[in-house]
Image (cartoon, rainbow, N blue to C red; front, side, top):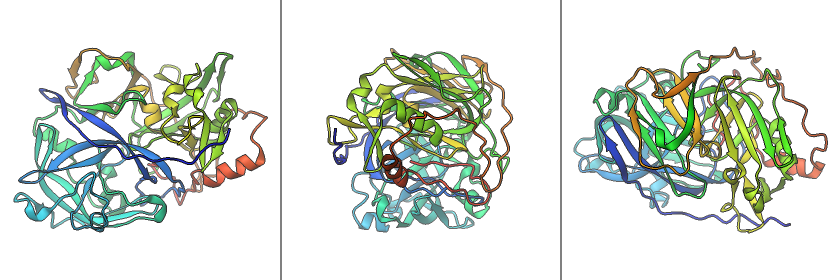
Length: 474
């Protein structure tokens, strides 16, 4: 079997109001494909060096900004905290990168105001792309929801490496305000986030949202602000605490504690982790694949017979029809467990071949996991930023009529139980400790040529100073 070269396609965009209830606005997310590189903000206290180019899938929402409103599409991202859009005069748009997703012309908005006492907006990602601009206040509309005096950023200048490609859509980061770039990189106090403003205006009662990405074959998912839709998951819904950054001791990223991984197929099942393993994981809608420590990934690769081509792990496309699955555990024995079937981990649209398909599992560091869309499609995830809790349940990919309950700010509705926080192992400043005591990888291993080719093009993780609290690899 000879894998063929990747064939990239660009889809049309749309976001329509799916349903609006009092204090629980819900909207469709449109799934599109982009040939771009990772977009993980660098933090002032450390960073992760990454070298990866990928056929990336995004989940986009349509928003409108200004008076009169100007419509554009932005990537929904649980791994960052700023909402920024490209200026119509930016080099991105002047070079033709904004045609599909739109841009913002501040000169035509009568409600546009620059935030004069703020530092210049600057965000740098680990692929070395940088975006510079200005914080501003204006009217923001998401579907039928109008948020006046919302603080956002308009980007005037972008520097993107050749490997990243020129991509013009903005990003709506919906993580904690302490993860905003002006706080992360420049030490400013956090500005009021969009979700904080929505709560202040009474649009939602709590800073919370539920994410349902549907199947890998679907073109859309939904995000529900301030509520839980019981029709979209299979009970039990189990909570885990969001963990503070080990370095800054604040809530700057959506960390949970990953504690187990097992693989099951027709031949049996195997636990790939040790009894006492615990490592931080980020549930990140801005990441396409699932990134695991190499010791875990290699066991999966060996079992599935992964081959490498163009720096991507490839498997026979029929693997998607197999009965194999991975089960991820969080918060210890009493925490939630999410089973991800191979049908959600094999991307048949990522190559031009009917034989070779991309496996959406790649290498991360041994200190953090990135659980991206290939994991999230199997889970219904409720992010409760007010109460520092995330609840997970198995996704129901064939839901009936919506069954929405509002999150009133106290607890997540219908949670069966909440796991306790587990003490994390210590990590030295240079990241040299093997804190993730994985079971022994398959002794068969990989041919040396395969291992050299794959690792040469896999994410290269090197920690600078203290371990970075947020690492989004894809």
